[in-house]
Length: 145
Image 1 (cartoon, rainbow, N blue to C red):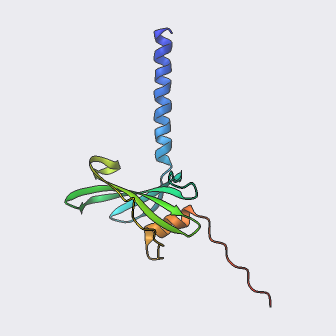
Image 2: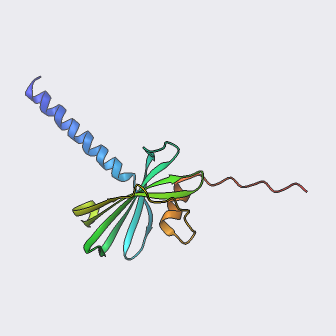
Image 3: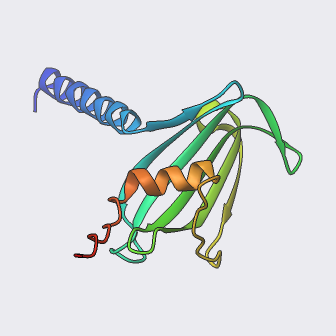
């Protein structure tokens, strides 16, 4: 392969890879924003543990560092499995970092035995990700009189 063609193909591949990375970042959807943080989520598709579950990532970007176990955290990202049939969530993993965008020093914890829980209406993040990820539950038709 001529060097010019090889360089052109490698450059095109790099542009495509960069475009794919940008497209993946564009998949984040803002859940809410307040003076302290912006919280977003994205669906990762079916859970690798059970295809009937949906796996999502939820990321909080904090405007000021938050003390988490002695680490000045600017980003927290949680991975959840969601059971749309029962409208329950289970946290699978948390990653925190000292810089925005999961940069800087990181700490990761896996939660393979965390129990399922049903979000309450006051539970902003969990109730919102269930509402946005799962179709609305069917409502019973009124009884005929």
